Length: 209
Ligand code: BEZ
Image (cartoon, rainbow, N blue to C red; front, side):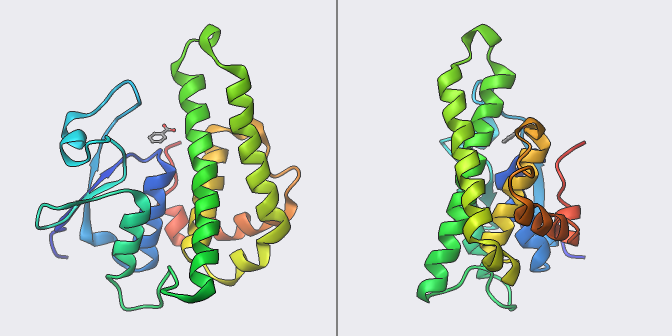
């Protein structure tokens, strides 16, 4: 096995990092990156990460030549250009825009879910902004409902950028927000997720217990 030439700033709890790891597994590139774990929160910046990505966000990818790529969408695109199999991000046509829009919806679920996590886990209860929290949860509910109503066939057709992103978003809801019970109103999405979560790429990248 060759020595990894790239470093991925990583946290095993991050759904954005997980998207990158799943794509690496799906395309057989997982040995190309060394993982550098960073334990960050919005109030605990990490100096070594900030030196590579001034906005202090993960994932960030340091290439062999020292250049750094971020954010997760850019890194996914980079690695999708580095393998010889079928692209996991369609290169052109209407499929490209639709699959990227589904991926964006999944990213929106992750954004809202991570913000709720930070607000509820890091701020004292008396400072919680309840109406803001509720609207983040509403975003999650709306997006999950739209996936249930409109996207099951598309998600089932390919395990590509759209499906990877949705799977990682749902995995994060299970990890941090089991109280949202997203399966209750979304049985088709739940059945799809039960199947894709068995993929080796998903099993190998589960968030910490
Ligand atoms: C989390 O602990 O939920 C988390 C950690 C890093 C990035 C995003 C979320």
